[in-house]
Length: 65
Length: 403
Image (cartoon, rainbow over all chains, first blue to last red; front, side):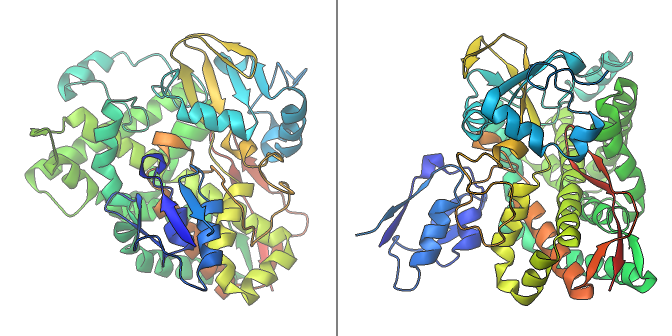
C-alpha cells in the first residue's frame, strides 16, 4: 500500500499527522508532508486509511496495490 | 416574534434553536437545504455539507470581508481619525482577507500555530486545567462552563500575546461583547471592538520600544516583500487571535464536558480507553462544532437553485454540515471511535481555522485532565444549562456534581 498527498489540496487541517504520525508530518506552516516516500509498512494500513478518510480536503489518496 | 417558518424566516438567536438546533437542521437539509431569512440584516443558510464546503472553497463568488453572522455596526464617529493614526482600516486578517492579501497575511501567522509551536503550551495548559478541576472537585460541585471551560483558552491566548493573565476577565468580557452579546446589539459590539483596538494599540506601541517573546512582537518584526507589516494589520491580526481563539475553544470544551456529563457510557469508555482520545476529540468537534462563519456574495451566483445577489450574507453552518447524513453515518450519534470523519468544524479551504492545532490541543488536554480528576460526574439535578449561539454555540452555564 502507498499513500499519496496532493499538496495543492492540503489546507493544513492536520488530521493526517494527528492520526497517522508515522506516515505524515507537519511542515513549518502546519501543512502536511509525507514522512517518507509514502510506502505504508505492514501494520500501518489502518492508520493510512484513517488519514485518508478524515481529510476534509480529499488531499490523501491510497494506492491499495 | 416567533419563527413562522425555518425555511424562510429562521432566527439564529431563537432561544430554543440555540439550545437545540439539530432538529431544525435535519428538517432543512431534507426540505429546503438553503434557507433564507430577512431577520438580522438578512442572510442565506445552507445546511448540507456539500453546499457549505463548496461555498467555503469558492473565493471567487464569496468574500470574507465580513465574517460575523450579523451586519457590522456603523463605523464609530472617530473612525476616520483612527484610520489616519494607524495607516489603514483595522480588520482581522487573514480571516477577513480575500486573495491575494490572504496568502501573505496567513503565512505570517501559520508558523505561530503549527504543531511544534503549539506543543510548547501543552504543559501550562495541563497545569491550568489540573488546578481548575481540582478546585471544582474539592467543592463537590460547580459550573464547568464558567469555572473550567471559560478559564482555559483565554489564559493561553494571553500568554501567546505576551499579556498578563490578570487581563483574562477583561478579555472574556470583550470577546463576549464582540461575538456573543454584541451579535444582537450593535452598540455593545462596537464598544467591545473599540476597547480591544485601543488596548492592542497600546500593547503594540509598548512592544516597539521593548520587543518581547510574543506574537505581537513577532508580527512587528516581520517583513513582507521587504517592508514591515503596517500597524493596522498587526492590530487586526491581534484582534483575530484574541477574538477567535477564546470563546470558540471554550465553547468546544464546554460542549464536550456537557456531552460527557449526559452520556455516562461515553465518559466511562473514554476513561477506560484513553487511546481513543485523538478520534474522540474529532468526533466531539464534529457533533458539537461551535462556529458558524459568514461570507458576503461578491457576484451573483446560484447555490442549489437559490439566487444569491451581490452583498447578500451567507452563513456557513459548519455545525449543520457536520451532521449531514449524506456524509456521516448516524450523524446525530456521538461515536467516539468514528473512523470516517471529514468534519469541517474548523472550516474548509483557504480559511481553515489557523488556530486549529491550538484548539485541538486545548480541547484534548481539557478533557483528559477533567476525566483524570473527575471520572464520575453528571449534571446537577434540577439545575439549568444555558447555551449561547449564533456565531459560536456552547454552554454558558453548566452546573455539574462530582462522584
